[in-house]
Amino acid sequence: MSETKPYVIAIDGPGGSGKGSLALRLAKILGFHLLDSGAIYRLAALKALKSGTNIKQEIDVLEALQDFNIHFESGEELTIPFLDGEDVAAQIRLESTGDAASVIAQYSGVRACLLERQRQCFQPPGLVADGRDMGTVVFPDALIKFFLYASVEIRAQRRYNQLISMGISANIAQLQADISERDERDRNRSESPLVPATDALVVDSSLLDLDQVTELMMSHIHEVTE
Ligand code: DC
Image (cartoon, rainbow, N blue to C red; front, side):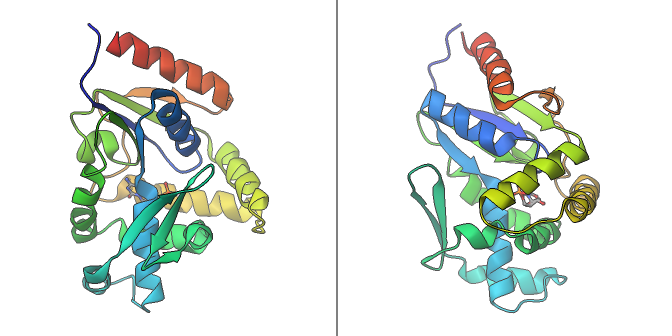
């Protein structure tokens, strides 16, 4: 049966699995909205860091988020995130911001505070939602769910290339260590851990390029919606 109602495509997986680039591609192909939920966690972490908050204390982070003004503007290629009116695209991509995001993402109060903002992104004609808990918690009724993963070595190499292309210096060994540590934290937290939804299609992107994974995902979408 052909799917005409707006629907959600949830793409979960660890950082560097390619989900960000793939979510952007699918959103463009389908003309859907895009939710980069990691950017929202990074913005929350940046807010806390900028206000001198001790991110080890949930209550202090929640206090900092009482006044959390963010918005996104469409750039030429990517969406530009703003925090309190400031373009923070480069700042949220720093490893230090990613680490802080992974720490504050463990807190149930923080996750609850960011939940509604994420759900509001589901607007016609549909949404591609990229994150860690899109298919399990934020959009449990998503019509289509993917869980992408890739080896730590390949993810570190991808992150390295990404940072260098942005003019940010990086060290592969350090990136591997950081990725493993962040994976541990994301997988083992009690709140919304990084796990595939039971009804997700699990895709190993280690040995596939973006075009191959796009093709695989699009054929799954067509199978479900046509
Ligand atoms: O995908 P990313 O690297 O931009 O995400 C940064 C951190 O935010 C990641 O370590 C875990 C957290 N996060 C989360 O807990 N849930 C999400 N849906 C998205 C990100």
